[in-house]
Image (cartoon, rainbow, N blue to C red; front, side, top):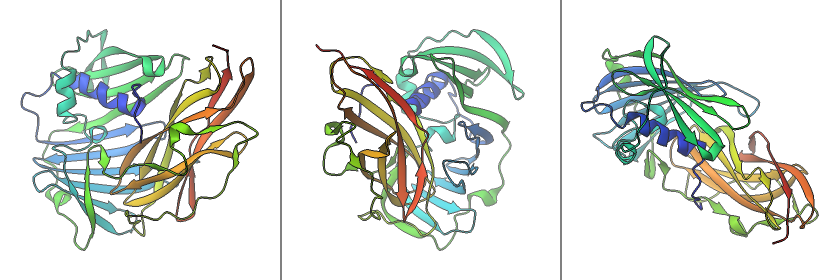
Length: 358
């Protein structure tokens, strides 16, 4: 999957977490339980740590864009293993885990030590003090050109970990990306860290940034997709995924979220060029087909995305739309992801263009 210099929201989240925590924890706590709410769909995450082991229980409520899920991830950072358990009665899996910490969004206390070091040079000045769910915090405001706005970051006063993050967009919208609702430094129950038995062993490995599988775009490279409204291909249901990644019987895509599109309004020379960004969450190992669908229900681009374990991955899809110079055009795009015939949809991202000759 091609990367771009602009950092989308999920990437920005990790950078912001790192900036806040750069001065935190010369000796980080090793026992705690964090309960968080994340994202506009109010995902609940309960992270419990005891030394080198962490349990992450994630509950995504059903919504119009997905069926929801209830899973628990068990990280053994010393043994380099990750167990993924479906708490709604499905099977479990185990895969090699190569990162020194759990993914940053799951643990704001220990998140992203390497990124923290890179961001430690940021000079952040607090605007005011505020209490968030019983935690004394200081508010920092960080420019965020990626969303044409800013990030409001509430950092715990004594130990400098993020307590709440709010994305304030340039158009006035605000989205709470993360908020700690409760925190305890008591030792968690020992039974949380007992590995389940009989789990399916998954080949390969995964890390804090996802598995080693890569997105493959069919027929043309994503960057070469160029479709006008009249030439756009009719949308077809993707064939069932095949390939090296195995789909667990209970694994499913639980959420497909529209992160953003750059630019939302195109004003340069034809054709109009955009980069759509989406976040896809899976409850276990699977391989999915995806289609970027236009407002006219035609396919702008398609491809495959593999998960080696439960988690969230970003997908960036560059497209070019055949709008002529001097023409005004408005449309939208959304992502459809299919696993074993089951479709999950993202929100629509509106786009427009007023192409001008060079």
